[in-house]
Length: 260
Image (tube, rainbow, N blue to C red):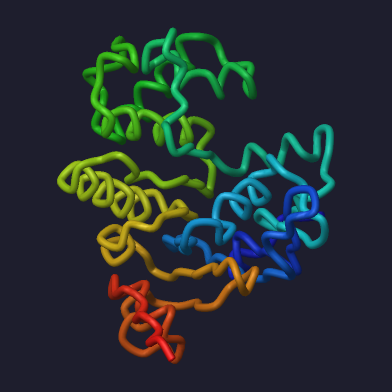
């Protein structure tokens, strides 16, 4: 299948059904992500955010449905076709998932070693450039244990950008960070989206980050087994006809049911 035209969504999920064993998590979920936007996946615990992300990046196979990455369906793809799709996006996992026995430079260089035949000096140069993009150019020789949690997240984003993908998937990038460090990471994401034109797909439940960086969101719900809201987060907060959605965006506790 040829690449999608530039006007088409860069990610398209169609009729996705997924779960584990007899436990169905998502049922016939469909949505699209536009090129260049910061798109966020929201929802409470158990709503299927992580399940959806794992299917979108090819870690899990769905029970039904399709996930098109820049025009190519990752579901059921294998061999060289699957490898070509995987090179179209980068992933930053919640913990950062840096290799503790490698320097930051070596961590960022790893995708280049796996997917390219570039000489070592060229790979090192690219890795340094990616670390510079996230403000870590002076820490290339440091080990992950020698830097802060926020810096580890930045290094993980640099590694995700190593192959110049058009899409970056980030899993809870602000998890475990203090408010100031989280805000700095939000600013970095917006800067990268604006300067590089990269599309971000981010799983999060941090309202400050959602309002700061999201162009558009979807909200998943465990009982609905799918999407209960989609759009601009401020519009959903102020105008959704779903009380549960409004409470989520306003951080309001569900009112207690009066005893009969």
